[in-house]
Image (cartoon, rainbow, N blue to C red):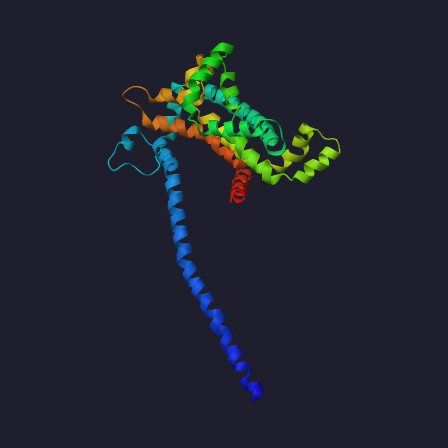
Length: 301
């Protein structure tokens, strides 16, 4: 009697307390998960639509674009539109200029910004807080405010019309220094740097042998950011480049959109061709880009 009566409340209580809330929690989580997936699918479709629409316009004629309702399927005029782009502008010459400028700018931005960020994050020197606060203020200012001072500076040093006038102003990337400084401060242990100092390592050796290998995800993120920024820059190259042989791709593509009878299918074909190198760069650095963004978000939280 005793052994039969004792387990009944126990076995009866476990399912009622354990299964009830678990099933309820699963039921309550399903609608939230479903709504999140629906929201993400809609967000992805909205994000991808401009690129898909660009391809649709590049593969059709301008007459098809102006139809009502517009044509939403791919056409067969892509090669014809590409040929029109190559016959109208110096596409490959301007692309070569842009590749050189974007590549050199990206490499120098990574080197200069990581050095500055390492100094701000791990070294004490007079005026460090004031300099970093000034850097944050410059990061919040609109880029248009710097156009006139930069042009005057380039005129004083005689660099107007030269490609290096596009590279050097981009090196002081306030966002890059801020981004890497936050990453180094949380991601590079002080104990490793202290051990390196005991072994006689100086500033540059600590930076090159210890800090740099540990911040590769953040560097990949900044590499894509700097390359895309240099590649898509339009206003500053339009102002400072006076030599037609040094024109960048974005300025050259703008020549397709002049006059009253613009061939928009040809313009979209040029935009599509100009976007392909960015897709390749993103594919190369995508893994580090996602890792850097994720780790930055976790550290920021």
